Image (cartoon, rainbow, N blue to C red):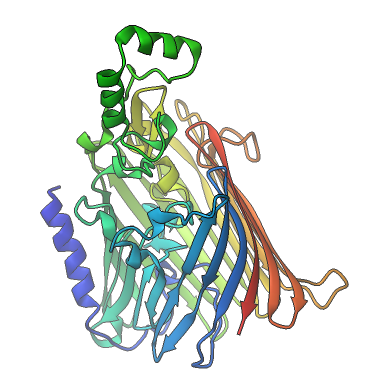
Length: 484
């Protein structure tokens, strides 16, 4: 599909956000996040000040920051005004060296709340599901934060009487709009308002999967293959070849004083490869009561130029504080469900060997049929904590890995001698032959511990581990957070 058509689709649903209507009588689970979190500030600015340390790509930085949350009526703005200084006392300049960096200081801008007739959010996207999830399920543009900051946008809402039309749209990164990057939209219609039967159509894609390669010095050589950090590899190699005799270069390489400058990889910036998915869905409330709802739904999707898959029946029940979902899925050849998932930004494009690149789309080639089950469970208790977990178990011939598990939880313990005020953790392991087997690319786990040392003052330990390109990346933050 032409890029212009994708832009038109995204523009259409964004324009729809200019209209509003009354909310639906029964909430469609396609628009209900598993856990929205957050708390009402009562119209007051919430300030968090931080002083601490963070390890990014093996390098230690001291960091100082302000993170205000500013409510403006139905609007709200969250900022991340953080300065990082290395062991030599030097500012981490790549976070402040160009005008567009100012955009990245906006952690989010929001309007309304999920479930309102109009809800918008720009900045950090932690949990985006389009429709019932067979194309985009709990996508996050923050899996590499703060090493890589993406400023995304999400909008959902309704138009027409009693919400006859509803819509969702998102993009992963405003900086990638010329690609474009990851964009997705869904438009749904309720042709028989009294029955609440909903039909939806989804279009999603990644205009350039190679934009997912991390390249901090922007020289066309991904970090994993970068020979000379913080400088243009090709320019530096040319300077060395002009300065040194070829025999000298060969000797330096042989003695290990110089990397093999003759094996530079292809400039990935010369590559562009898109992937497009489309889907349809239908949902209907089976039972509705004041404190209980039960929805049934079915969905199908196709990866263009590859295969397709479907799920039916799917059911979702909600009775506070519990929400449960369950569905049967079947994939035809060369199809993966939840294509844009929690770790998509890690799997989007990867380095293979010393000179080759591979996209997530390339994983589809040769995949066989598969069938299995999906299920999730949410427990949410105000001021106590929450638990959310989901699992997908797919199996079939020539479908080597189909077990995916995700879990997250947070708890606010009562007063205790250890002064622990909050605990939070998460674990994600995609596409493994067995649940809880060895870690591989795309796996992520981490957690936070908040230790209270005074009223409104916490020491926060934040540790995250990610697996990508056959390597393990660890990020640790220890900071003092002051709320005022």
